[in-house]
Length: 499
Image (tube, rainbow, N blue to C red; front, top):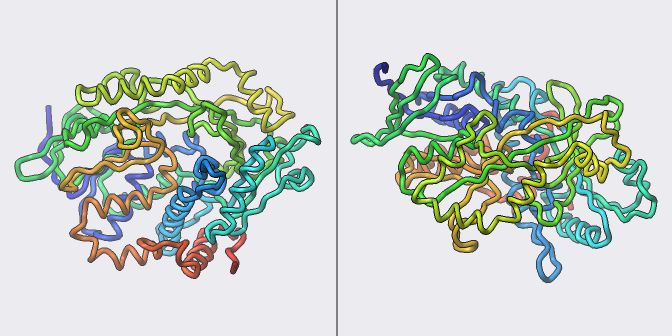
């Protein structure tokens, strides 16, 4: 049984932070456009965007060591860190605009100031961290960063980590106070509440079965509602922002751009502290170095989090393997994503990543005590009874053929796939994902609506003053943006100072 065709201008599939961001931007740019959202779960922000399914780090490359690479000549390449930091600034500006426009009432509902730190052990790693610090300090984006290998200073910064450590252990850290903890689940729900008030048509418990291009250039979607009835919806533009499920939905579109792309699912676990006295002793996000052979998404970190106005403490992630593409997905997700056109790509990736597969299987097999041993590298005095295991969200890393890596190259990052005519776009991949949602959505707009960008530019500049500009090349604009966003979002960390 099916109901009559319903027409709309834009369809957003998946009620996560990406769809929430795109929908909010579009409603500001073209309020008259009709937007319809389909989400297979019964509320917004329940998968990758959920606060318990990601680390909540406002990824600004302040502490993540995998964004700064040591070159063969010993120099540190910080270009990726610069790129991600500038992208996070775009998100902060957009959120500030929403607060100033009263679309968000209380920014503390989703963002809190929190120092970001990098921590290393061993003389070689300390040398690397010092060189990284020196390279970043020369850049206006990272002013305010401090370095120390003095145990007394580190005891002030991270007492929980320093207590019980041998006094002669070589250890060093960098610290910058302008970091943030972001509750992307709360932000997603806030944005969708706003969109609902703007007559956006929200449809929960709705699953997209098929999509096809009609003769008049529209996209027609068959959507199964909560009663099991089939609905027909058409739109000029479709955005697929369904986390791990995006790959399957993109494959249903049949566009040439979806060929030779696969996905590799990685599950995650965190240890969550249950002892309030321990939680109170730590106040930072502290990122270490990934172990040799471990993938970038498994960089260990000890995170203060603010969830439901309560301070918590998480350690992880411990990687794992599940063939599901979503936490609420199917055990057949991986198998059904393999098609004739991406079979060679997937097989090539399997051969290239045997060590990763072995690593993930080993991680799955870890006992609680083995996980506690890893935690004790961060907190020497950690007690098993103070920590419990939390299952985080599923991540699906993109696999594609690249010039640099050849067939079946595993990608670590976020990718936008669009059709040649810009009528459909899909977001694939993982971190830094949510933190750079505004940058990603500006990319979607420029690829899919090039004919509108000139008329939209003044409004985009009003919402995001640095859009299209390099903050690094404009220190004055950087200072203005940083001061303004810190004030509006209630962060009040250290302000950028003249160099």
